[in-house]
Length: 52
Image 1 (tube, helix red, strand yellow):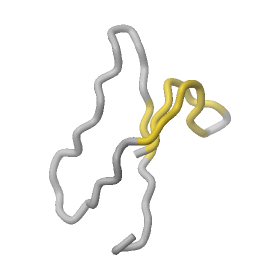
Image 2: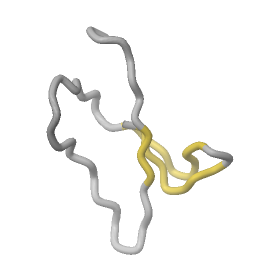
Image 3: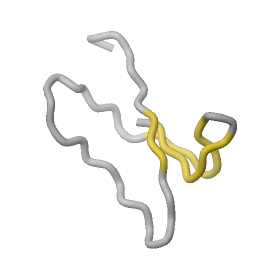
Image 4: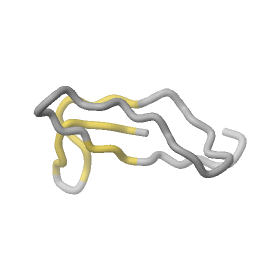
């Protein structure tokens, strides 16, 4: 998951980062960091071929 604190030109901008890689092998919850009170965080899913 790629994250940032704002949307810019259809993408994610501001202070950005990336979560630890997670293999989505089944359905279920994905733990996401909760932003600080009053803050906003947008997430984008980064998908790669199976096995990578």
